[in-house]
Image (tube, rainbow, N blue to C red):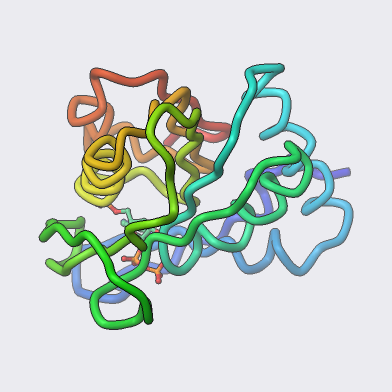
Length: 171
Ligand SMILES: O=P(O)(O)OC[C@H]1O[C@H](OP(=O)(O)OP(=O)(O)O)[C@H](O)[C@@H]1O
Ligand SMILES: Nc1ncnc2[nH]cnc12
């Protein structure tokens, strides 16, 4: 099989001029690449016990839910404002190309639960840091921040210094 990174496509100037967007849809639509990616993410996670996988809207849902099923863990969505129907905790955040609010359901994580945060891309780290803040506000223990792609030149890891950060592909 071709290397996993060959299934990630660069889209210059999307969604704004100056942003080089990493498009993971070619990887998702190839069965062998998808299977291999999930297997490698599982290797990154290792054998730590995980109660909940938190995935961030929307691309964090795609692989996050698959990982949760494989880990025998629950899946928890962190969503952008106004999308979750029940009571939420919310926090404002900045990302590489914008600003938004993230929310999580108040009953999604129980105190002391082991949580894996998953997203497709770590860019500036604003999104992941905000998701971590929400998880910790609820008493969750973050055992790993897990990404398919890390854009190292944006130094998102600096916002996640408190955590074990792992990613499959770095740029
Ligand atoms: O590290 P940051 O600079 O915060 O950026 C990373 C975030 O940006 C993307 O999501 P986006 O908000 O574009 O939403 P989408 O997944 O719905 O496309 C990506 O999926 C991460 O969640
Ligand atoms: N350059 C980028 N490509 C894809 N997703 C992103 N999220 C934040 N920055 C991104």
